[in-house]
Length: 202
Image 1 (cartoon, rainbow, N blue to C red):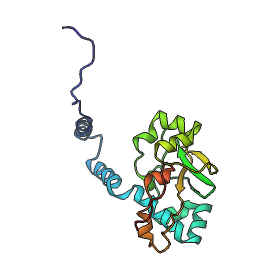
Image 2: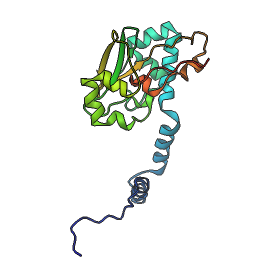
Image 3: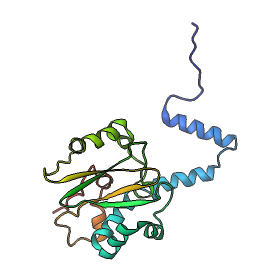
Image 4: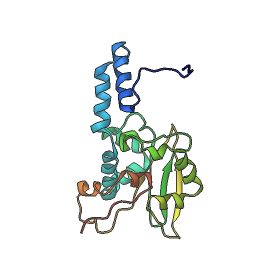
């Protein structure tokens, strides 16, 4: 039976398609396998929300560090080796009893990879990008975050030039915890603003 759709030799499974493309590019000498391994190692073990959580925990316990991060975070991030592609021009915005901050990129999916890793699918979705600007409280409710009526919600729009990270409020009952223990309370969603810091286990 005649048909006019294009044929492809790539498998239908996305993972297999990626592997097939990788093999093709390596075989043609267009990609260095060692460079690919380094990229995979970086995003598997070196970048991710654990980096942002360490920074937030340090901001909670060290007033001088917190002040420096609020003023100009880039020198400190470079010093901590938390600087790189998609991590330029960071601004840290702090949640308070009066204000809750949320981050979005309405144009595409600008996101601080060195501190939060690869963005989740919902962050890149048209629905999130459009709705969180118009009705942030409703979007937060979808994530299970219900804020008091009197608390303002501020939405920050990331761009290729500027990326934001939310510093969540330090939870009550965490006063005697170490930085490492505090970092475990800080989730990726809390640093986007679609979540809150976890409560300490009693």
